[in-house]
Length: 257
Image 1 (cartoon, rainbow, N blue to C red):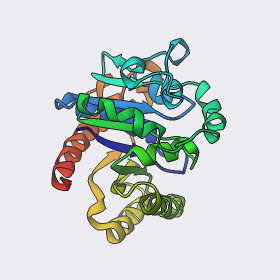
Image 2 (cartoon, rainbow, N blue to C red):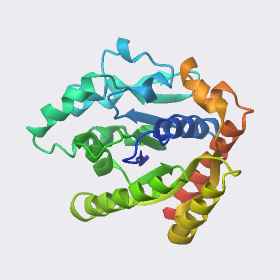
Image 3 (cartoon, rainbow, N blue to C red):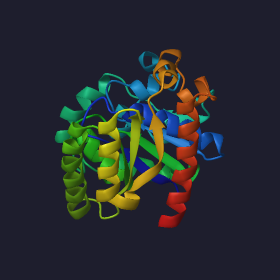
């Protein structure tokens, strides 16, 4: 059975999509079967996996409205080695349509169930807001991975996200838990980032992943080539950190079982 994880943070620009595609590529490199579900109407995880969102015949929009299955909608990212359920602007309209439907927050969970044996990991790239799309992701997931920068405002947003996860856990998905916090775009030369990093470890303890993703130009360049950084430049510090993170993720999941 696949382990399903949301990559979520209500703050924008914290590296959710970068984390999603590079974790997927890192997991694929160490022999895991991976599916990315792009729940963001911007479709960045789709494009960052080398799939043209404008040419998709079936997307996560069709999956949520139950007009297509996961098996029908998935695309293969050949160079990166994982499958993708893509997204494009159509998905923005799904919010309005879902409101009127039954089980509107459980659509993704129901769609993923028949495909659960096809994968070891399903990673859901959530939009930077607490929308009905994000709620679908949280209701489908076993856990949440929170990428965050070590900055003051990131701590503010984190408390909101933790409260949201607690509410979903209490009312909609009792399996949901925070798997861990991933420090991204980290620059050890900046004193404030070191201080925030220490605060995170003091407050969240073992929930903070040991792996730290450094600020890395090659990771930022990779999406313009339609590749995760792990594939685009495997020797870069950022790519190596994500492969290390993939290994840590596998170990952490084993300890949860």
